[in-house]
Length: 84
Image 1: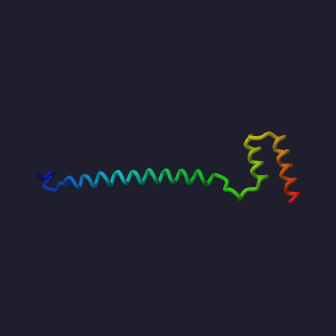
Image 2: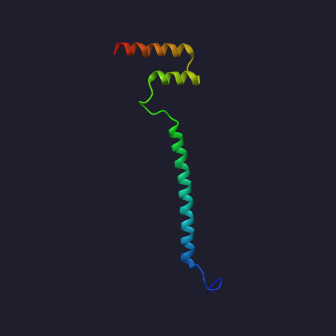
Image 3: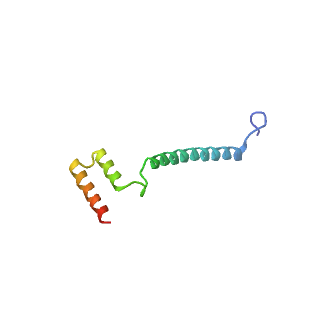
């Protein structure tokens, strides 16, 4: 039986259309997830590119350590550099 004037999709046409739509949305969602993860990674500090003093200063600026601890650790780092 032909529908709409004899031009029907048939079972295979509808199946392919459904599969295509599911794949399309899966790719869109995967692309969004990949983009979000990439943007999160670019905001992070890569290992080996920042000195210990800079990391220590960042921790102090964020309030993770107080001034006394910052100065003590900075002095420890300075002593280690003088020894090497």
